[in-house]
Amino acid sequence: MFKRIEEDRRRAVEIFVEGQSVTAREGDTVAAALLASGLDVRRSTAVSGAPRLPYCMMGVCFDCLVTIDGMGNRQGCLVPVREGMRIEIQKGKREIGR
Image 1 (tube, helix red, strand yellow):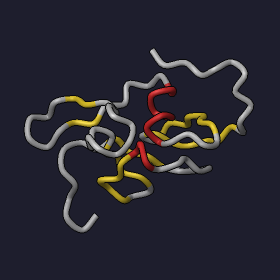
Image 2 (cartoon, rainbow, N blue to C red):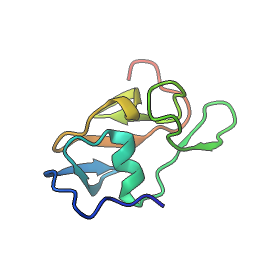
Image 3 (spheres, rainbow, N blue to C red):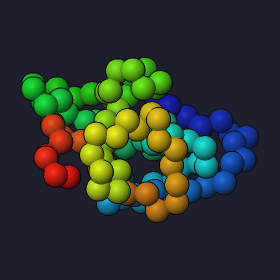
Image 4 (cartoon, helix red, strand yellow):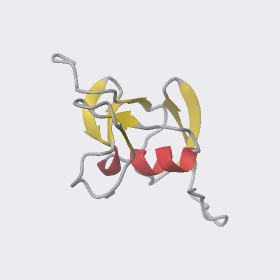
């Protein structure tokens, strides 16, 4: 569904999504990198467990919540990727103390 522009000359950055290596581009947000990865990466809501994908891409809707390097409830659309970043798809609500 999402494709990178062929002429994209930005430096490649390796991130890990659910333990799997994914190539992102310098300047991507976490949400953009996840959408471009081709992986089925969907968070689930705390109340109904409904699957969600990034929607607004500007920090308003909170549908892009992920755990980044052990810190939950991060808005993936607002966080730029960096080399070696570890991302886990958020499943339900964040546990207290994490």
